[in-house]
Length: 301
Image (tube, rainbow, N blue to C red):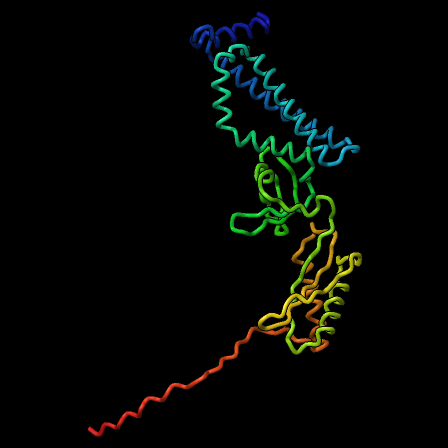
């Protein structure tokens, strides 16, 4: 008995352990065949997707967004081809699905509408290039605060945004489509930073303005064109309020740290030139003191 005849006998033995359901044979052999084909389809899809990714990464004529878009579209086609080939190897007659394809498609549509919505939203984001890997964006939260970070990658379901704290947020693609998003690097990397400063009312405001400009000009990362500027913002309750405005071209390196650098440099300049930063204080005016209580007579008992 040769090897092929031996395999045929094993196949027949495993196929005999089962039952018939209509025109379909359900047996141990067919169950094992399904598992093997599913594993092969998964491995083939993974290796093919990796090959597609490596191929697009070598296409240097395309930028990062075009490479990612092509990778996503071709990857979807690869997985569809693998699934169809796997169904053919198992012996599934695809025409049999025409009877219940409408109901099945409706159920899948309701169950995975968010998934397909996020998938299409991610493809649209890549096609219109409104958000690209490497962009610095600010996305508003329900609490009124904003999440500021750099786009790491655009996936099938969500966009990965890494903040300066190295916290990675996974924001669904649909949220970026329907909500307002600030893209600080959409058409230009130049970002204007505003730093509020308050000085005492006894301060020479011309001197204070010169020191603020000097602090901005002597800070690394602050652009010289456009040049920094200082505006008198308001006369507050406890201080004269100024605002330092300057530009940077590397928002991905952080905004809070450049504000800190300017304020630390300004603190030393204020201290060396006698400019005081006021603290909150209140004056209390008492119109009339209450009458003192009558003296208590001594008790001699």
